[in-house]
Length: 113
Image (cartoon, rainbow, N blue to C red):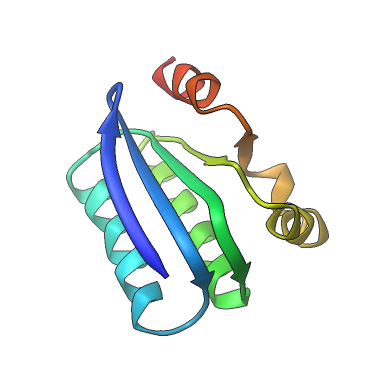
């Protein structure tokens, strides 16, 4: 898995690619979320457009990141979830807690509010 970060319109955009599965890369993603919370980076947009697969550990890190950000008064949204990932969110009922978008500018506008 590869992780790229940037600040866009005051929102931290985290772009993931590859497989979001247990291992050292997943610990790095956990650290990225924790850093966002600790440094009060505000809202986070997680781009999953290039994620091939995600296992239960990957889902756990997303839920944990979402929970940590929410506790601090921030929001997290998902951008460009692939069909497989979107179906995974539906099956696990996580679709009810994640805001999802297919348009980046729409997502950024929503997170700036």
